[in-house]
Length: 297
Image (tube, rainbow, N blue to C red; front, side, top):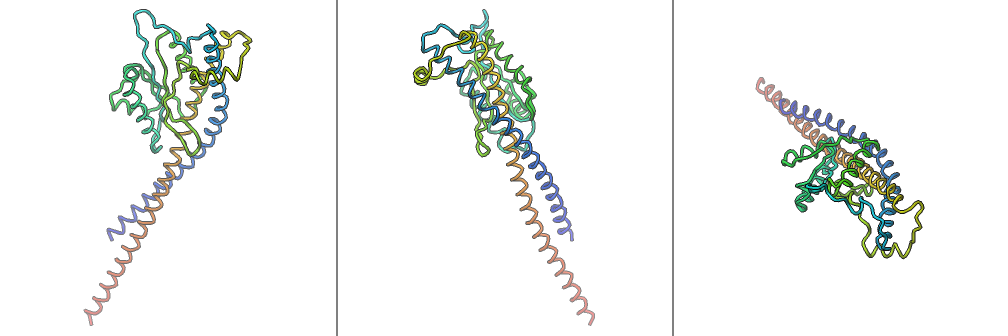
């Protein structure tokens, strides 16, 4: 009797867990649909602006123009100081997202190990899971950002503008972003992206771009770059955060679906165990009744 009661309690517990994971899967699916629409809608603009800026910069450089910009060439550090690189790591605030946070943090730690200057420089984190990971591994962070599931462009713009201001003043040497890049609903890849300085295309690509397109600037190139470059930095950082958010929802949706399926299988297995235990108990009781009746004859 005690065994069947224990199995019945486990069946009830597994059923409760299955209902919770099923609900979380449905919530993640709903959030994923909205986040995917946002990420996909902004990607053509972001990629278009970024590639246009790189192409113009490469065109100016290959054409021998003396027009340059601090966001491309960098700025000298203040006297008596050394500019250090800055690394921004984007993770989630909540767990139960499968390998999402683990993949990002493994890549981030690999980046910090392979670039000693990055480990000694400034490290900023977005998401409590990443902050807890770095704290456990005794990696000091300079700032923690609260982005959440719904990134507001004004908040991201303030972060990007602070990077632009500090980079142009020579306080930081570079900005790298470690995040989960959204490629499709079935494919996401942890990525290290160099946000600053903006890199012109390679010499080969620049020659092809120059051969294909010759630009006439109106307004002048310097004024145009002053507008386009900060816009490219802000939109690229926003796109990275949008990719991270939609990738988190995909990872949680898949993890919760797997948990729901496993809970269903476990429930069926426990039900079979319960039926066998109950049948054995009934057989034992019948045997005892028959043996008692036979003893009375």
